[in-house]
Structure formats: structure tokens, C-alpha cells
Length: 366
Image 1: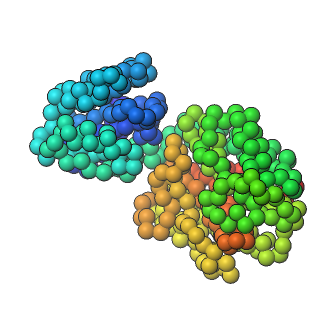
Image 2: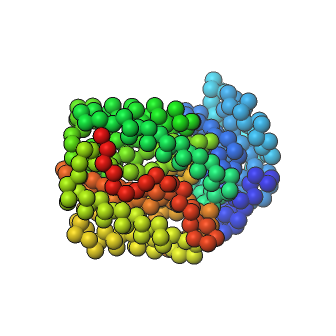
Image 3: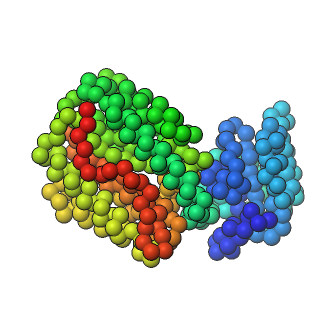
């Protein structure tokens, strides 16, 4: 059961008798295949001892069988319902009274959880999402290579988009261009719905592109976006100014740029995630724009756009080679202007490698 080898230390460290997995990033990392989560439960239970079991919708069996699952599989059909498969799985994998079963609290749906509770009424179900997710905390060279491709193609799409931006366009029009260019560049999906925000909308960290706002000279134009390649996600933010930039906005931008540079400079193995956040935020906090800080420095990146390690104060987790995360300081003067500059870095044995290469210096477009 080599596919489950990374899970066994997690079971031991957390005194678990089993873990229950559902489709998502952890499932994809272990099995190498993604399955959609819809109305049909698909659950794999891996015990600390003995063979695993899987409850699989009949219509997914053609996709599940090639995985070479090393345990018992219990398919079910819509017309029969899924509880019979859960009951058969429980009979094949009896758990002692009080058994501790780890579940992915950020991923498992309520009806999956209730089905497990029904067939294992004497088990303790424990949210060990963070522990289970450590199977993908440090990326392999192949995974980093796929991230590089996602990032390179995303950056190429951004450059093509910028060449088409004109004063008078709406945010929605620019967004449509960006989406087209991402797929033209060879991305096979989106990391998330992109953020294209101009003027006062740039001061909303999670802005939605507007169809009724026309970009004006002097506006900030913020892009937060990413394309996917073979399941791995880019996550890049760059902020530009259209036509011209005021002296105050230039100082605002350069403060964020200095914070971004500092966060990248301190990134290396052996320091805590909070140290990167602290170094980055101090640049903003000691500036004249300190009141406009709204968020931490960054988050892990990989199969999920937001995953461990969280780059924030209070997270004492030590950075290790292979960890990938974002450095994305921002300042947001609500109703006026927002600036965010986001890079993706991977920790190496000798420091870090910045996977993003799109220029960061202030740039006027249009």
C-alpha cells in the first residue's frame, strides 16, 4: 500500500485508528486523480492496521479501477442509495469502540460525515484536516516544475492583456481579455475567478469586476489571477497605473514594493512562517500608510490556491525545502486606491527560488 505510506506517520502522530478521505487536493495528491464532489459520496477509509475500504459511486468505477486501490471497493447506484455501501464497508473494516477517525474538516460534507457516524456509531471523529494535508506540504521537483509552467503561462497572458488595455474599457472587458489570453497561453484551467479592479475598486482585496465602470486616466488597475497546469495553480498579483500616476500613489505603491522585496529576501529554510510575515508587515507598519494594512503576508500554494503554510504572525511552523507560498503585501485606502504585489516562492536548501518573474517596478499602461 505504498500510495498510503505518507498517511501512516500522520495516523501514528495523531493517535488515529483510521482516516477518511474524500475527493479534493489530498485525495489527488495520494491517488494522482481528481474526482468531482457532487451529490454522490465517494469516501476512502484507511486504517492504521489492515486493508482500506472505498465507497464509490457506480458511475465512477471506470475512473476508480485504474488507481489500483489495494483494498475492498463497495460500489453503489443512485437507485439503491449509498447507505448499503457504507454498511458493507463498515462490516469489512470493524473499528473498536472509541476508535479515533480523522476527517478532513475543510472538505468533508455533512452527509458524508453523517453516513460515517451512522455505520461507526461508537467512533470518535476528529478534524485532522491540517495534519492530513501535510502529505502535500513539501512539493516534489515534478510538482514544482508544473507550478513553474502554470506561472510562466499566466505571466505571458498578463503581458498580452496589458497590451490591449485602453482608457474607457470596463473592468469586465479587461477580465474577458485576460481569460482568453490565459487559455491561449496553454493554461488548462483557472486557479480561481480572476480579480480585475480599477480605481476605487482596487481598494477591495476581493473585488469583483464591474461592467459599468470605465477605466480612467490615473486609475490603479489591479490583477489578481492565475492559470492552472496539470492541477497546479499560479497565484499572481500585479498593480499598474493607467495613463499617469500621482506622487502620493507612487509612494503608496513603492511602500508595498519594499514590503514584497523584504518578504522575499528573508524567505529560507529554518525560519518560522511568522518571521516572514513579521519582516514584511514591519515595512508597512513603519510607513506613513500603516492604517491601510488589511491582511497577512501570504499562504501556501499548490494543488489548492490557499493551503499550508500560512505566512502569518502566530504560525511558528518552520519553513522547509519544497514549501511553496505567496508573498503578497497590500495597502488599501478604501474608496480611493489599493495596491498588492504578489509573488510565488519555493524554499530551497540554500534559500528560496522566486517562481514568478513578472517585473514589479511601477508601470504605467494604456
